Length: 244
Image 1 (cartoon, rainbow, N blue to C red):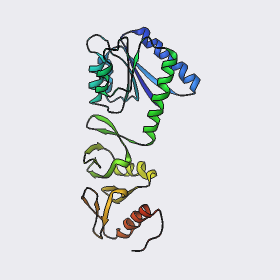
Image 2 (cartoon, one colour):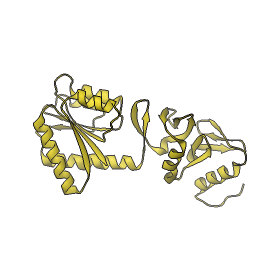
Image 3 (tube, rainbow, N blue to C red):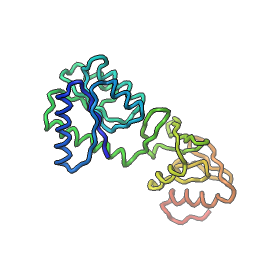
Image 4 (cartoon, helix red, strand yellow):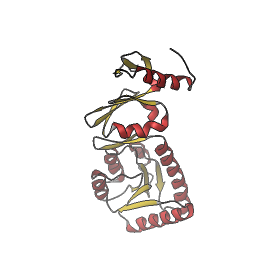
């Protein structure tokens, strides 16, 4: 289900967007839940408590803290939320790119504009949800593409996601659950109780270890060499039987 946050100090604007959302859901047959916030501080407090939203309609000109500053703080918690700025001035349009805004919409908001933006942002959200993993990493929510994950290891209850870029992300979770999430992609194999590898980034296999593209060696448990080898060959040659 898509979750939307609306933040504006003008109640009439919140009511208007809320009405647009209701109309959009009815016409498109969609289910979208939304939460209203009258100030950036209310919104930030809710996000700090762990709430996650897919889309945020955010006013820029508000008392105390403007929308650009608010968005910058939100980005320290959530790199994925789609921020749509609402404002009566084009003054902050360039600054909106510094916080990776999805869209910059001038007021007054018209139904046609709202509907068009919603079509676009929902399509983007759904594409990302189908082709990505959402992780909670040290108080921040982030999204990764499975194709950019080289391997994952678990140490105690901490999952370490090693990306092809060399970056390592930490998240709390279970390798069993992660294995189930990755099963549909076809390129991942759990070669060890503590490791899942992306077979597309395996450089070579010996009886004792798998060497990844990043040159990390991951041990193969005794008696599992043939299983790992067969999984790698099936991935590399499209299930064509190859004898080694």
